[in-house]
Amino acid sequence: PFDVLVVGGGPAGAAAAIYAARKGIRTGVVAERFGGQVLDTLGIENFISVQHTEGPKLAAQLEGHVKEYDVDVMNLQRASALKPANGDGYATIELESGASLKAKTIILSTGARWRQMGVPGEEEYRNRGVAYCPHCDGPLFKGKRTAVIGGGNSGVEAAIDLAGIVAHVTLIEFDSVLRADAVLQDKLRSLPNVTIITSALTTEVIGDGDKVTGLRYRNRNTEEEHEVTLEGIFVQIGLVPNTEWLDGTLALSNRGEIEIDARGETSLAGVFAAGDATTVPYKQIVIAMGEGSKAALSAFDYLIRH
Ligand code: FAD
Image 1 (tube, rainbow, N blue to C red):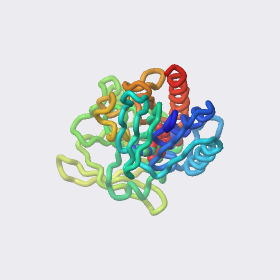
Image 2 (cartoon, rainbow, N blue to C red; image 1 turned 90 degrees about the horizontal axis):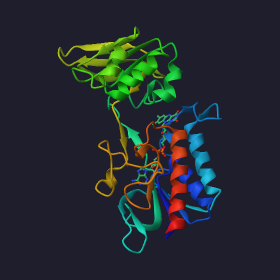
Image 3 (tube, rainbow, N blue to C red; image 1 turned 180 degrees about the vertical axis):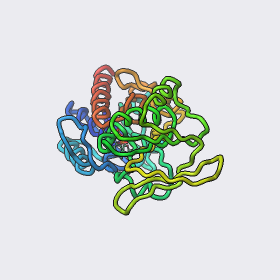
Image 4 (cartoon, rainbow, N blue to C red; image 1 turned 180 degrees about the horizontal axis):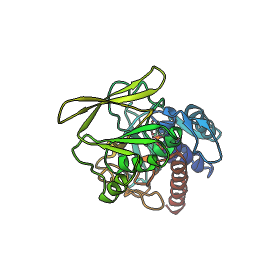
């Protein structure tokens, strides 16, 4: 049995494992894919103190740093259920493989995934014009033409953010109206370099084989196809937390995020959570690492009191 069992091997889980192991307690990490979203990232320029790095390199460094310590890393294992402690003081994590692991404290850091449009060209041009994170990749499109797909709060916020950096933003919304808060919509409409297109279904990402050159959309009222020439497409149709397996076990927000307090504790005693899977505002690598460290310190504090 573990003192701390971390579920998820992204930046949050790696930080949690290192902070826990440095307390000299029995620490394990179980991850479906060690590295998490970082593995799918190309350039990273906002990992503070490192001017530029690349996702696969950072993921390898995360794993290398964790393995400096006495941490039991169980990669390529997917957790399927969490059973709270019942009297013996040990919670159980069940794995899809059929195995189960016991621990006094658990840190959940299963991250999230960006909802994709699922149109031709999206996968092919991912990181070559198709982007999901304006805080991360916005500056790459300085002075260029971009589109934002999605007119909810995140899409409209992204469009406002990008409009200050890029030459022009086309916001494309499937519905006949934007769903973002009125104050955001007002701000968006006040900007000179933004075009808003509603009732539009994006049908294809177009590229030259190397990078994005445009997109195609269908006007849902007229069924007419249109093409927009641009260099970048930010897809903002939702960030989905990887918490389906926890449904009914602990408190989740209406978006499925694990609810945590200021110490990273969930609604279950001895169960902590960190990173993109939680209600923490802003989903970023440095934030996930800070949150993972915080959750591990809170777990340690819990252990010395129980
Ligand atoms: P994740 O990185 O999502 O890791 C989750 C971990 O949990 C993975 O190991 C996963 O396999 C595992 N897992 C999930 N479900 C289970 C389960 N049931 N059982 C076991 N393990 C499970 N942020 C930046 O700060 N800068 C950037 O430049 C940047 N660029 C990005 C580019 C792209 C394309 C993407 C997708 C994201 C980018 N981000 C960037 C966001 C950043 O990657 C995330 O905020 C960060 O990785 C979150 O860390 P995390 O540990 O919370 O979750």
